[in-house]
Length: 182
Image (cartoon, rainbow, N blue to C red):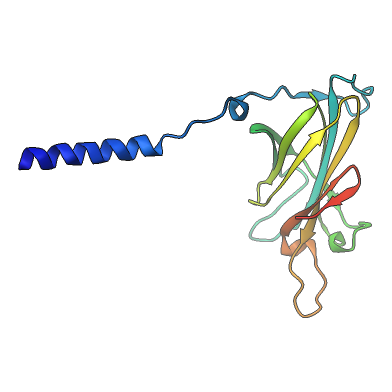
């Protein structure tokens, strides 16, 4: 009886491992060819597509966590799983055209132009603060697409205006100047 119980136990464990196995489609593991090109590069051929990705963030400096223009900030772009890590230096900033970014702080801006094959892509922006935004889109050949991630700061509480000192709560996404609804 013990042998039967032992055999059943081994079969049960083996069945569990077999059930956990998942066939991954070859499309999901196909590497993406991403080429970083100059911001002022000429338009791509019809067999290629460019996307200009921009985002920014303003960070405050506190006594217990001082931040200067030399303090780096990291963004990670993921295109169909291939990650591009960008560590930026900031610029000391007081004035801003954006109400939520007025006041003393360090401004970080990312502007990256990538050349890809035309097709469907999942593009994810991740910030070092743990915030992220994702878009699935199809890029057409021979065209320069623009993708903008605009930070939305803080949470509105009792009519209080949003401010960069409260931190980013999410990113609004604009593809070719059209807002993408979540």
